[in-house]
Image (tube, rainbow, N blue to C red):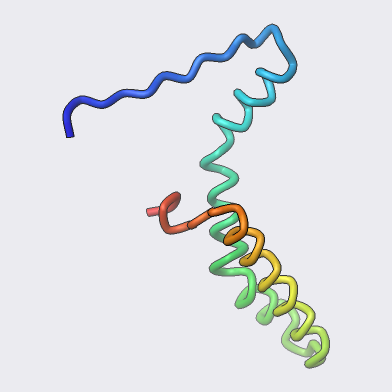
Length: 83
C-alpha cells in the first residue's frame, strides 16, 4: 500500500463533536476492556468465585454469551482491534 492517511477533524466547540472526539481517543481503551471481557472474564470470575454454585456459573455463561452476541450483532471483531 502506498502512503495512506486518514485525518479526523472535530469542532470541539460543539458538545456532539466533543463526544465523537472522546470516542475516537478512547477507542483503544474500549477495545482493551472488550478484549478482557471476551477473552478473560470467564476465567477471572471462575477463579474469584471458586465456591460459586452451578447456577451462578450458568448465569455468568449467559451474560458472556450475550456480550458475544452484542459484538457479533454490531460487527465487532476483537481480533481486528487487538494484536
